[in-house]
Image (cartoon, rainbow, N blue to C red; front, side):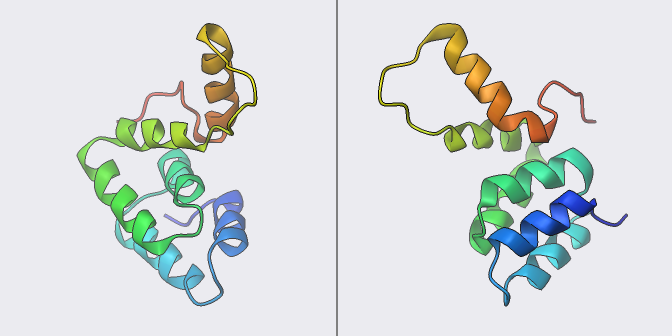
Length: 103
């Protein structure tokens, strides 16, 4: 199954010219597509080694890839607690369809 357009665009945007084709190849070889591939690519942030780790993590439990994305929340100058953190996490990971079920 081919990768969605936004995923291929994010690969081109974040991975080096040399690594982008390999990143695409790794995702396709692993059979990752849709929301899980999206989470992997967005969380890898252009790092091919990280992409490989996330693919392995998704093989064990796709939900771990979604949780790994929580580290992408930007730091706030003032402390943020409770619902504000949850809302920020959901906004940040919305591209991963966090609330959707993946079997």
